[in-house]
Length: 351
Image 1 (cartoon, one colour):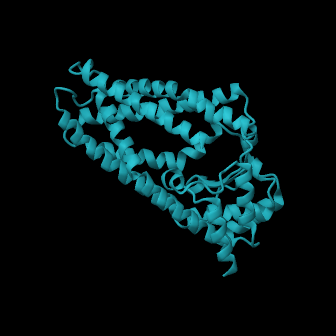
Image 2: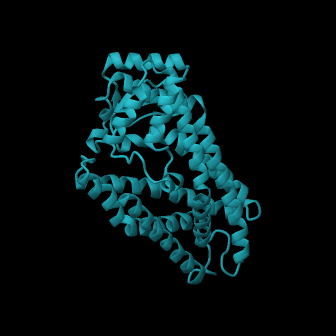
Image 3: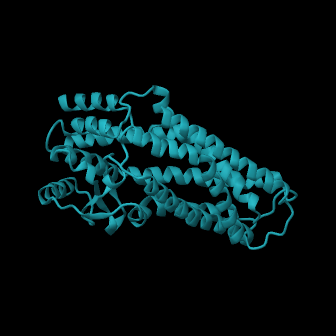
């Protein structure tokens, strides 16, 4: 809960930064020549992102470094932690700044129809980040190598074949132990780049447990959960850009002109508020997907009990609260509580 409260405080301060920039741009900056739209967008996003990073850094440090070391969850040194933050910030500035620059360019080039063109560009960015970026960007933070355990690899490949999951990139191991004691597994990428990734911290689990975890991840792809979530996010983005159009028209040309920095801030605030509003619904869908994946794992994993055993180990290793308050799950968790999942798995395996 301490990490949750620190995150909420950080988010509130970051939103305050956005409001401060909004009033600044609507005041001192209003009426100034637009100039280079792309540069305006890039600089505006960068200034806001840097300011938000500064105000949230103490809370990020407390939750991501102090608590992680106090709970013996992190293996990372302070210089390593800071270096990862710097790399993450650089990627944020590059992607977010470029997207904001293109957003303002579209507004200037198509002052009437800009909103649906910008919405389409936003959807393409979401697809890129969701499907392609994990393969391209993850190596910036972690090292990958083909899974060395041949017996385990063959067993996992047999599971992929049995479930008819189209995975062409093989089975890979990620050096998560260089930063954390947490464990995880995932199917990442798209098309020919789709691959199985296991954290090296997961390799201490039994083969039955690892197979059960992978079967759960396969279910997300077989059930097309990722495209469904992308579609939901895309719909929210399109609606958010549509609302931004009317918000900017309501502010009027006296306060903001197409291509001005304030356009980025107004749209950013609207998307944050909209995201906060629909987040509980997204989380309901996400938790429903997790239940389906658990059910799928109990059907396709060779050994019974593997998923339950793995969940208990993951809960202890990742220091997850097995039974958090209901309001916390409803508002913030994309996964059901471990206790709830274990109860359902037990009932499915008995059936």
